[in-house]
Image 1: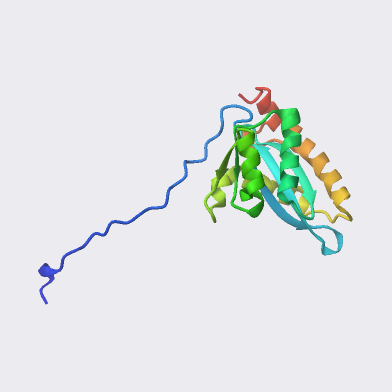
Image 2: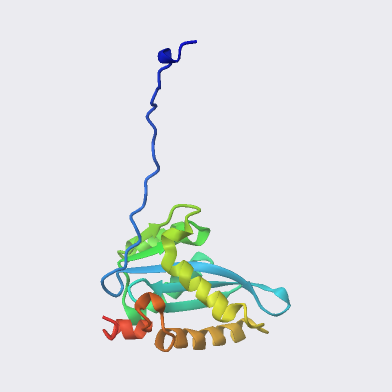
Length: 186
């Protein structure tokens, strides 16, 4: 067989759409990120934490703890934040059932909020909330055993205040989310 007679055939291929690189928003409420963490309280009862942050200053906006988070619960949490904070232009989330439900999609459209879905299996496309989730888990969630949901929610509320106001964030140059918000870290 003569090698000179072998031809290379280049077949066209399709490439999956690549999402845009994760950028830091230039202002408050441009993009929020949300995600869930699974955990347990005393005697192993399963719970889920709904975490929501503002990508601009990495501020923790909510840690909502429940045994489950149906769409109505997620919407209620988002509306509570919007009431005091204003609404985001977009919310980045994964493709979990809570995020792709018709109730969430309809609510977002009605409120002029774009839902930015990451590709399945690509959590790095939601890196800000993934990093925040890791901090929640290592700072307190894996460190304590809670007797009830209310104990866990009380602790998380106190920790969230500490995270936003006192805990230096290396991604923000060692400043807190509140310092970034008020221009100290600018």
